[in-house]
Image (cartoon, rainbow, N blue to C red; front, side, top):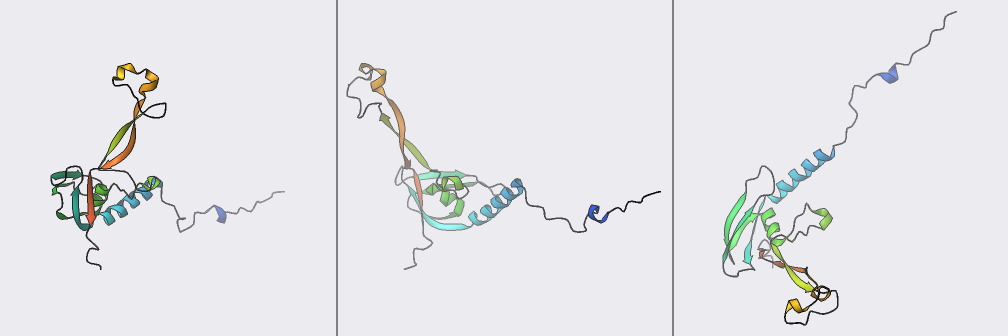
Length: 159
C-alpha cells in the first residue's frame, strides 16, 4: 500500500513580478536632499544687511549640498545681490531640512551671555573676589544677536 502525497508547488514558485520594495531610509534621505538642493539652488534677488558692522562688507562662504560648488562672495551692506536660496536662508538663520527645530538654526548670529546668580538680582560687590561662590553665579546664554540679514526683493514691486 503506497500513498502518494499531492504536493502544492504553486505556492512555492516565485511570482513573475517582483513584490513592491519600499525605499530604505538612506534612499529616502538621498531623495529628500536631492529635492531640497534642486529647490534651494534657484537664485533669489535681495538686499544684504550687515547688522554687526553697518556700512561694511563681509565675505560669505558657504557649502551645503554635495555636487553644488561652494558659495563665496564679498557682500557690501545695503547692496542688491542675486544669490542661491540656500545662502539667503542661511543669512536669515533658517534651514528647511531641520524639521525638528522648525527650521530655526540661528545661523549668522552670535550668542549674548548674561550673568545669572543663584539668588535673584545681580552681584553687588565691586570686586568679584569679595563675593563667595554662591553669590558669584555664572554666565548663561540669554539670546541670539543677528550678524547678517538678507531682505528679499522678489515681491518689492507687487503693490
